[in-house]
Length: 210
Image (cartoon, rainbow, N blue to C red):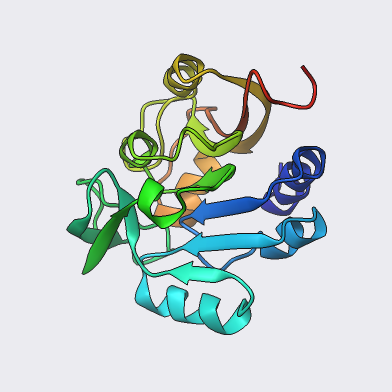
């Protein structure tokens, strides 16, 4: 699926959930914000550690809360690695690119009452989730991959298992071509046939289809 199609598909699920507060971790250029608004989300928090992107988000989306930080399991500082070709930055070791010292914040401190979290942090997902506001979350959208790639995302199977342990079930996932992303983002030529999957998880005891 194309990225634009995935945004529309996620928004269609959000219409059913009617979230009160959505937090998007790794907001980049805020491409999804219009879809969140169309889905009826009134309160949006955008978390973005790259300074120039955070500044652009503030300018483009003055009605959203923009937090310039990287989410992690502790409040502090860390080195963010930004590849030359894209803004797919990560706190995980192993990616070449520009290095920037950034603040780190726990998600339960940034958005303690969020009921939907969208997480796109290039391999740092479990650290972010370990400090998420689980008491209020009803839905989580997270990027996964069908092959091991520590600087891209967790594996699909491991994330499904992790979220089940938190009482969440998958309601949909949307595939993208892993090899195309490798060529576009990093200039790597791979032929794995793998998928990157954006997965929507809903808390089992509260989702509208139960």
